[in-house]
Image (cartoon, rainbow, N blue to C red; front, side, top):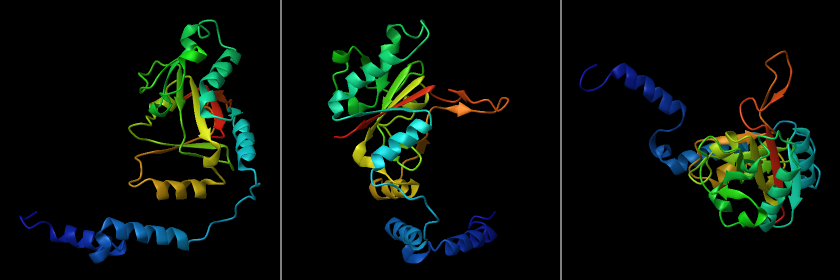
Length: 231
């Protein structure tokens, strides 16, 4: 390669740029985004199931189908008490049913809640890897499949929903959308730039690799409990 660069390489890259329509005025980010949005808008969606008017009820039913447990509460201030009731109802082995099962971590958005008043010791920090309980919010949720959509970020550490045995996810009823198409449209509309990861969670971690027997907790939480909050 000479000091001026490899002409063959530049020729190939030039063709790639032309094919992607990123030459000239289209090189700036705003124009590239407009091109991408126009492309998405111009391509029709494939066949989709008809969704009911009550997306919250549909989401809760489908999430239960995916082995999540679901509860609905009226106000976010009820979250600690609802989490405490859920933990009390779990049938855990004696070693897990000790006080440690009422300890955990949460995303910073829930740091203001009265966890101590509910008898819980919840810290607003990323998990160290040995926490048994992780409490997260969600970006939105998908009624069609009962799926949670979580975005990675400084205040939304992914480990909180992947590493603990029990994942409690808080979903705003107003953020339940019909399908995956609406979910990704919401991500594109509200997050600039895009997050590094978009995590889709449909129930506890599971595998059927061994003798086609479903085993929960294979690559993540054994349990997923969802709190749908009206306001």
